[in-house]
Length: 165
Image 1 (tube, rainbow, N blue to C red):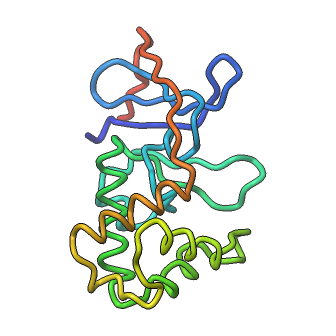
Image 2 (tube, one colour; image 1 turned 135 degrees about the vertical axis):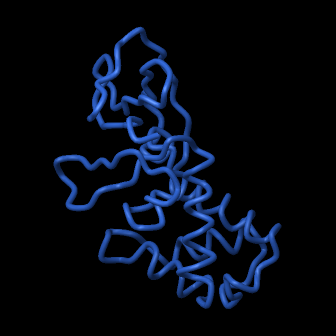
């Protein structure tokens, strides 16, 4: 895995991420940032993301913070789950969202909380750590949808990877 990588780029003028994960180089083109990055929670790089196969990070020139890029969407989901069940385990849904997507990052946490509660039927006072596996899965799906996870297209190439030493 040490030679796996991903980086932000463009492909035929469209936002893309270039991946090498052991096979041929491929691109995830268009779609949402969270889809291109295999990062349904739009997570920032951290020790949690690094422990879940983060293979790159990206930001646009207009942004001050990076977003993690994962080897696969499954690893992105695993990192999101790990973050929720460790860092936010003792938080209510309301408190979690206000920390996870703060106003200072140009988010609307109140709208986000209301969306989650409408989609899942959960109370904003529910503690993340008290949720059943099914409820946690519903929470993660609602957050992924709110974060804008929309597919683009995958383009496979015959490009040779640039392997790191």
